[in-house]
Image (cartoon, rainbow, N blue to C red):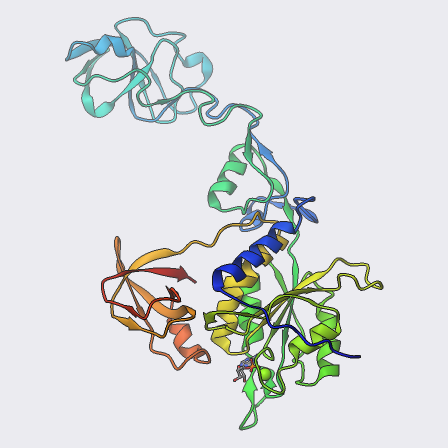
Length: 424
Ligand code: AMP
Ligand code: MG
């Protein structure tokens, strides 16, 4: 098999990310859900919704009091203090027949949070501004019409779309589904993601490494990231730095929905990943990004145009082998594509900001994502770099809880500056 030379395409971080976002946008474009399955409500937490969820009745289903107090006619409180008759008490879940049909002028009803407001009343006065003696209550504060009442259907009308396909089901979405009686939900199937580590020096985690051998940690960091992003990792055996064996395992990896390779994408004589992919008719979107760590990161797809293949083209990432580079490039590039494969609608990458604790000096030219520790409390978040030995230093990265994002044109960031932070 001859290997066409791979053209070098090195992009800025932003351009590289846009290329990934663009490809992510094409996935499921004509078929929003892809393969789906039905799961119990709680098992759906963290999954991607594959069916629309609608309101089965008005929300709230009745005008709901948001306070403990007295349901009143607001006009009755023009002059304060005002004394009103108390004609009943309504608790949350009160039976309909026990709720006064209407409240007349000069009348009120004692009411609890979550209880239905009777007709005639147009506001609820908080109990803190009242004192009841017998069947009368004295009120010391006025209320605007509508105050402390959520009208029937104000949150959603019966039949309204509450959750659309492709949303990731967080606790609020789960609560919303529960509130409309969905004990089961149709969710997208988890994409299978092959993880293929390359390198003659790499041995498995159970092996006793020789003095120049390294245990495989990248397959495990990647598998953990895949799991966290809603994918199902498939760990392949470690591939050798030799074309035939490497190609065979890449072909195996292309049977999944996404292939993540680590190692073998730098400039060394035994970095053969791009060549092996090229022999399998890969199309490369980029072969590098101006970032640190992770400059040699590769993104492409394989299988398009190969006549024998029935499956659609499979995307792959060649992530640099340095353990921190692997973790960071997954986060920056593989994650949005995996989100899309998982059925999620694409989201823009957004960074938080925190105040820098200590000055940073770097060289310009690369956008940097450096392991850092976010500390401080409440609104006073501060961030500082962890001391590290470069992108092989996994111990330093394990101490970090975020990355400081340094623009490629900055040489010095003084202490006290607000800097962009990418959370873990
Ligand atoms: P490479 O990208 O293949 O040049 O590898 C860069 C560095 O990362 C080398 O020091 C490798 O030994 C190391 N490395 C590569 N793959 C792994 C892995 N799976 N686990 C831990 N270290 C790795
Ligand atoms: Mg290698």
